[in-house]
Image: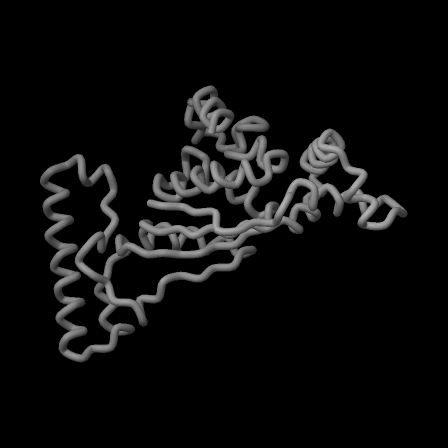
Length: 229
């Protein structure tokens, strides 16, 4: 898996702070932007996050390029509807034999299951390629491809949606592949907006675990991991 931060709002922390300050100020936007010190920005954003007045966070956006993930993960990702997506098309791009499928570690660790998974995946890919060679349209041949099919996607989210995404998808109860992807997205986003994302991560970072009976029992480890990310 590879995650790249392709673009983001320049000085995202300041942009959000200016938006928050504007709502309660008679000063011009230029004045507000210039008068804000780093300390004032930190206090404003801390207040925003604490109060739940998160609409101003939508003025900062972040665009990621993600590859080496499965369709299992992108199907989960696009459930986050307040985002923009551009995904590699299986209609117009041809699957090849190299790195065609993502294999979960649990399967790799079981030699018998790994061999059977690999054998069936190769058969599916071979039939897919044979269908293309015989003139079957790619949009129809792709029906044989499994959820493990390797894919690429570009996603843009604003800071408000990213915080929500991180809250859900970095939790230890999230599926392993999207959890790893979300953690890497957070690792890249935090330097770009250190105040906004300082306490970003699963819900237990800033409060009690909301999972009830499904609590993972690893609160200290999780908090330490995201504190040092």
